[in-house]
Length: 122
Image (cartoon, rainbow, N blue to C red; front, side, top):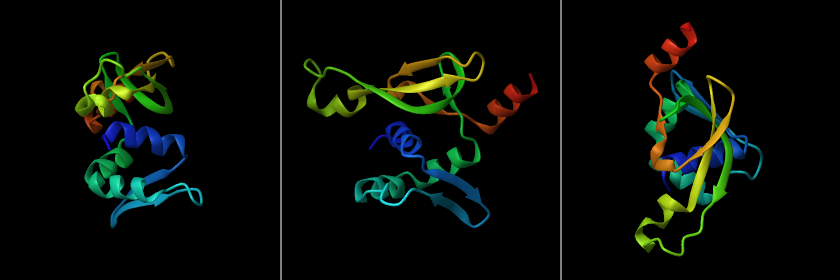
């Protein structure tokens, strides 16, 4: 599972991630974490820890926060090996103006702590 799709799913399921000195702590509603989600979380553990420490994402429009919303796209003309990357657009609410926009998962990156600190100073 692609990282941004995983993070969107975790936000949608109200899974809380916390970066603690002893590692990543996960708090999830009972039954929310399926075996597939657990496997994806294990595969992306380092990125989840970064996200827990700085829960912002970077888009072409600036910093934002994942909303957990997604829209499904028609895959009629998409090659099977690319379908995961093109199946959904994910929602990101802008920190600048509060507007939610939808992006392809590969257009969204984890923000750095430096980016978030610069934004908070404004």
